[in-house]
Length: 375
Ligand SMILES: Nc1nc2c(c(=O)[nH]1)N[C@H]1C(S)=C(S)[C@@H](COP(=O)(O)O)O[C@H]1N2
Ligand SMILES: [Mo]
Image (cartoon, rainbow, N blue to C red; front, side):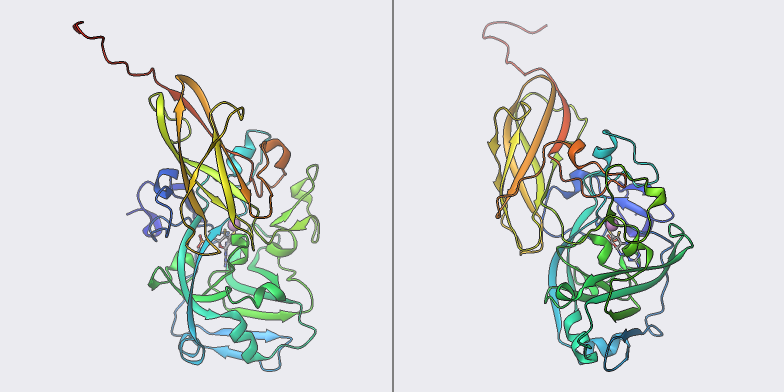
């Protein structure tokens, strides 16, 4: 077993803070991602919290300030489950670095997303118990992990608008795939905000605050905002750019692996697609001739509204250098953009350009003609 209980072949971008994604081949099965395969994104050291002494504080614009133990959460509220795909805003950033360098950011491949069944209580139920002041417009989350990426370093914090926070899909979760939440994924309690960038699903949650304005913590006010293409990210000021929230339609190829050398001929191509909030993946098309001709991929059944969908197609790959591309369309008619250059931004967020793998296909195997003998 590798670091933090992850599989040995995990692609570890950084050990401290721990940032790792599964190799694409490990995600081809779709469905629920095993805990040892689930990607992990951290901005600081992983806290080691004692669940017995841990309390969740609910404060801010509330009628009753709450201090809840894990037992309080389990016994005073109805437990529920949500299966959700978490995707980092930096998923597939590496393909953007081919356009222009993105210094100081993790070069994620297509594996900075994974799916789990989370168990916990609805955030809406806990907020209802505290009683919200009518001025509440945002719910802020704070955790104890201090990130050196903020200047000065500060604990991790973000917020979501109240309308999303009250959604029945938003959980305070203590279990993942029927196991206690692993430490690296936020034990004892994390937020799960399905359909939104992973950054909003705060791990090691210890404080929920009702506010009139968004959180002014670094990871809400400065990072995880889409900067204008010409911006210098080193000089971003609070409020610059567009805050990232709901996920954009995305689609990537998982197999054959980028850079691999499969034989030419009929080849199974697989990957995933993920639609934004309130939308579904309508179709995925795959091409091996730069988009002149397309083959419609078969889509696996979705396991719910908040999860990825895996797809597969068989393409007759020619011998030589071949680029396989995949594009998706969602239920609102939106399509994934063709080129990484059009989505490039200085922080490398939200690359949802066509999935691409470059292959070198071997010569076609031809059986020897009848009557000839091989040496
Ligand atoms: N407290 C805290 N919560 C956090 C983070 C963090 O660094 N600290 N990283 C966020 C980001 S950017 C992502 S993509 C997800 C990753 O969740 P995972 O590590 O369980 O895959 O957690 C989010 N929650
Ligand atoms: Mo992220």
